[in-house]
Length: 161
Image 1 (spheres, rainbow, N blue to C red):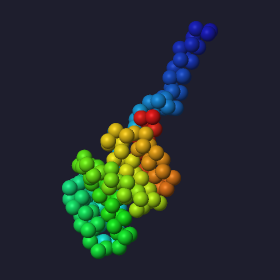
Image 2: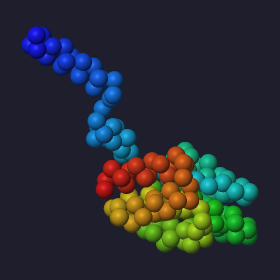
Image 3: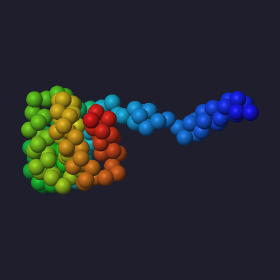
Image 4: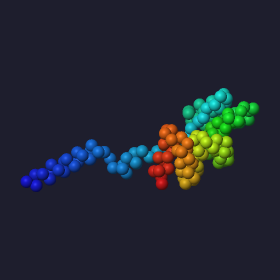
């Protein structure tokens, strides 16, 4: 009698696994991003809006141009702060030597904006500084919980750690 039940139990166990789904390790492997995400910030200034639009298109050189134009203009400090976040993203994606300074300035100008930490963390990630990137991703998560870019970058750091 038990010999006949064993194949039935094995089949039931396999069916249950199929319903329950993959193991935690398999699920995590499926959810691990391959690269960090950068975000653009918009503002009232037309150059800031243009730089944000170019970031969405991954047109990094043009994003850099418009962000720099906003920073060199007589626009408000609020617009310049947004432009600095965008400049960080643009420079990081072009492997520019000024990326670290630009991203640190973006955070100092926007210390309560999750976007500044997300972009600096992503830039640090690309430069191989995963521990520092993870710290910025954690701060971004505190400030911008639920944001798609924050979720992606937090998952990236968790997968690598």
